[in-house]
Image (cartoon, rainbow over all chains, first blue to last red):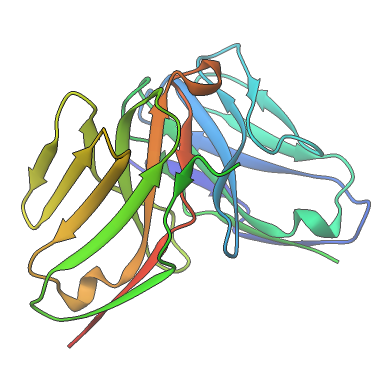
Length: 112
Length: 115
């Protein structure tokens, strides 16, 4: 099993460009998450999907949109990238509430 | 408002000694706590968890203690090994914010274990 996979691993964008970060899990998990990690800030939740067909905002949703494409895939879209969105993005999944979340390897995004 | 706090940004210990990482929380609705370990350029990996109905959970060299009255938990690593050098995140879950599917993370503590 690959676990949680993320593409791309690295990306450089110019201000105003758009892009989609892809995430897939092969563990048949119901819930999926997108986090960003900034120096000194820990992991902050952007959006999550408790189950297929539902999405909810996390702590820092502004400037992002998500799509739960199916049970396996959860994508994060930046419609108009800003330098403040320079960060490392992690996708995670879990089988349910109160269970451990499994994280992908991350996408390092730089917005110039 | 930071609901999960790790007040020590870094900790340095000698190999073989005990490492104690601390975490405080403010929201009494949290009822499940987890510790994650993160190496550079990798995603966090789950280490150990504890439910609020317990005060201790042990897994090999790792033990988590929970003091609900003080809203404090700690992770003990005994004995510490150089491979334990990583950033450790404390996380909490519960009905805060309306969903027990969310984790709230602390800012992390960088542990360095010196040979």
